[in-house]
Length: 305
Ligand code: PMP
Image: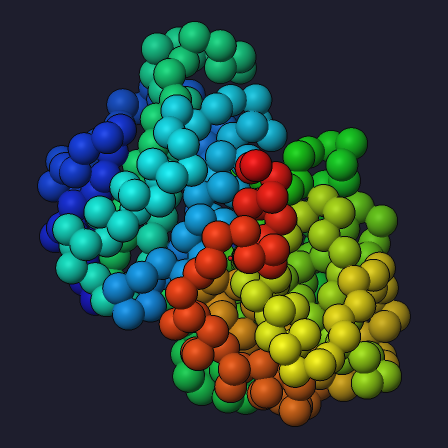
């Protein structure tokens, strides 16, 4: 693909209207560009519909609140706008990036006096890990930076500024020949990869770190729901690097990654095993199910009520 992101066909929804893709531009003195104050979402379109759209729209609004501002559109209006822009772009499969940010009225550390904007851009490019990588498992390395603790940053927000560390670690991992980096939290417990949550099978139990200051992924919730349907229990608890010695299977999950088995974390090796394979087999049917509002598998909707 030779197109760059600013040079695609189609439409972007911005501040209430659909505009041709190439005409959507921002001024360089926009607060969010300088101070990381944008919040965003990553969503997937399956058969023309956005998976768990309401949960994503609610999380966007919640992220903004954690950064001290309100998105000036209701959750339902964001859902509607998303459906409209996906339809206008005639997309059956793809990715959606809603983003809210603080504008260009004043420039300084304080964002007071700036207006809040919202854009929603969907495109056809899949962000899927390669098929070979998902069959044999991806290779992770331990990150050097840790996720900040609750006394340092509002880690539950999907905020642009919080991706600085993830971006550095992802690049470092790619430069060293890995697929991604595994990040610890401020206490040294396993947190997540740079853009996905993690599950492990330890002594036969399915375990996932408690998301106490990192993103409680919508896919993570969906995977827990799939496990429950199979009658499996998922333990949310502190997971320590030492636990990796006893893990037989590890997999990541997120909107872009879907469910991706992990082959190794540095010297620790894992099998692409039965738990991950069963959940991967269940996932395509799940993403095609109609979302029911208040389905209870996304804390974001409950938080919005
Ligand atoms: N953690 C991080 C840091 C992420 O960027 C993502 C992707 N949004 C996730 C976890 C997974 O979240 P979700 O399942 O909602 O995409």
